[in-house]
Length: 74
Image 1 (cartoon, rainbow, N blue to C red):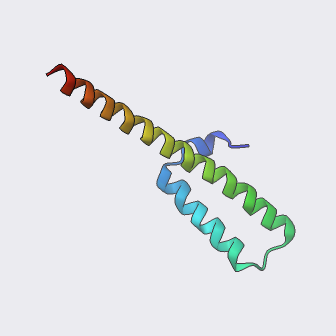
Image 2 (cartoon, rainbow, N blue to C red):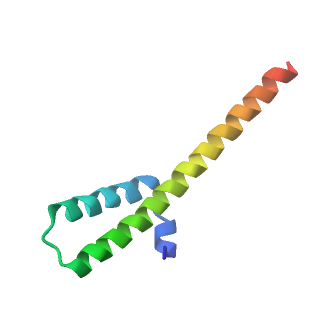
């Protein structure tokens, strides 16, 4: 479950931590329990990134719709 600290992460912070999680998983050398914990953290971070990107997409869509509406009125 994502906690409040994760909600405060910027896209860049979540992305950078996710890159580190993936690097550690790919490097191997961790126990099964550590690997599972890393994977779970990676899923949480991916969710944070996804929410940021969905929010950015919604803002872009709204701006484009507003621009199109303004062109239609002129």
